[in-house]
Image: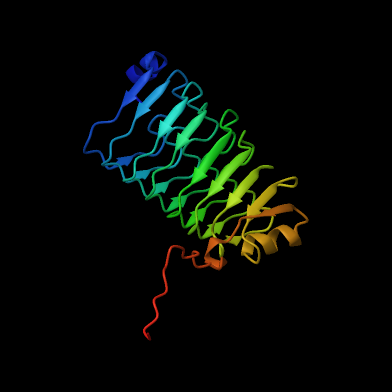
Length: 212
């Protein structure tokens, strides 16, 4: 940052990123502690490490479907209370949302291939919804949470979910196995793919004899 910017950054309350920008750079808005809102256009594909680190007044973030990666500590220790993650995000890197103490719930889209180490550690997150094609959840990714895990084959590292977590997943899934190995309480999602569909009872038919 230059000297002028350092003198002005306390007066910045809103960030509007111009359409056409493809990357939010490393430390782009780091420690802009009075920023309350940010608008990210659908041309951005990557949020670089530390981009919004310690933006403590920031409350609501909508990450567009164009974004494929959220970098290391991108929102570390920010004040966000609500975050919508776009469906095309492939990677949530290490500690991306760590220490976001006001963030209480999060939904991980099905397209995410990796939730990084400590991604939501020491955050306020207590409720998590994990999509049906999520690939890997790394060590210390979540604090003690109630997590619904729709992915049947997700790889879950040791201590990915803190002690005291309650999981809801499919019986026989990798999450089921993880819960049993780590002595976590688990509830089961009803697997509709295994349901036997009974034919509907046909009524109102009249039998007519072919013989007189």
